[in-house]
Length: 318
Image 1 (cartoon, rainbow, N blue to C red):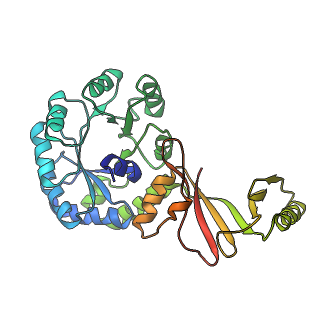
Image 2: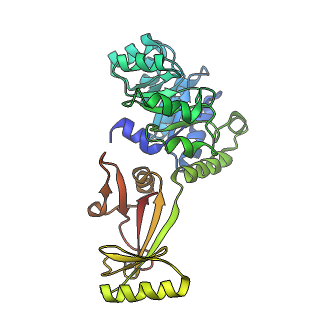
Image 3: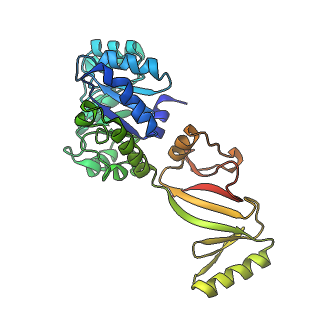
């Protein structure tokens, strides 16, 4: 998978400051236990390079970004230690140019149109919007996306569990950076269990799974029609006919049930591709033939392989 697509499907990069290198691996483990196999280790401390090296050795498959990279020398140190990606708070032509010359993936910081044009002039498509909340938040990103429609943003600064989804819901935002689940006090006190809990909570917000509808299998169009009318009579649901089913409110009655011995359950999520990525990391697989995509190629619908007590489950874009 392309690195930036992997960042996009990860969705959230925890921005961490490690003051003591011995905290690096337990912290990375806590994030992974919470379901997030990624971290941005910032060069705000003298042990950042060592911390990246330690995490890379312990977890070879982890997505590691090096943050607060200000100079070409920092970029070299980060990549030599095993970082996948260079992230900067601002736009330094010298640092960005060095990364491009060396072939390092780099996401520099921007906060205004002039920064955007400097990034575009160097052929970049992905930028960090920093400090996100202080620089205008989602409205500012939307405003800049008008004239710079080909650019994608990773807002960082002021991101928390309350506003995370509002950022990720805008299509030009490919990921967010945040430290709300990895604050300094939790790291310094070794409260890694709380970091794991907050990480799980953040992923829950990001994926926002909700029950969309329940499907039950009929054996024929006539049987499905009769069932839908009974449900309408029982609950007062309106009836809507589709080519393969009838909807009676939130219940889909299939004309010829083909998925699940008893039926199916539809779960909505804002980003089906991102949800699939996380579920696949937990060992689940999707039926390739069931996947539907939008014009850009992103999944909007997919069935999980297998059944759960006779019910098939599928994801659908909210």
